[in-house]
Image (tube, rainbow, N blue to C red; front, side, top):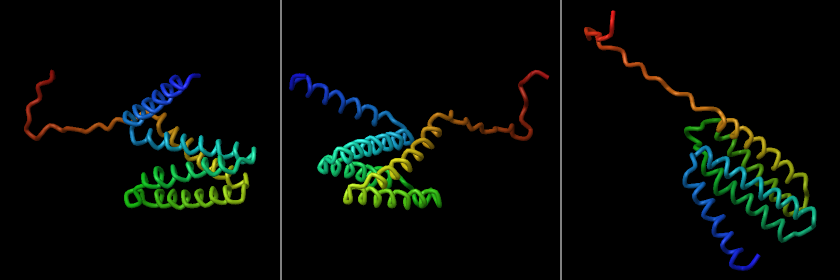
Length: 151
């Protein structure tokens, strides 16, 4: 590919992502964050296996940033109650495991983090796949109202 073609492809990809983000529901945005963190973990795993410390650090730092700057701030700790608090604690734990994986060049904590995040993403995929349940509001006729239907 030429430099111009590479730049054009990168611009297209960036604009496509911006369009996807702008049109996504809040639930879809969470799934996109999970997709991004799992991609970063895959890149981190590959870098760890080929013993590329710089690439491993960059990929795992990106994964941690997605958790700390995307997933954690999306939690509503007040309205979400115990579930949101548990997710917060899990995100903190996963971040700690990713730091261990990076500092010690260990694959086990990285794979544990990927497994946990993968399970969370699967749950969100189920939520997105379920059709929204319409809420019907009953509007009773006021007392003494006349009915115009056929008797």
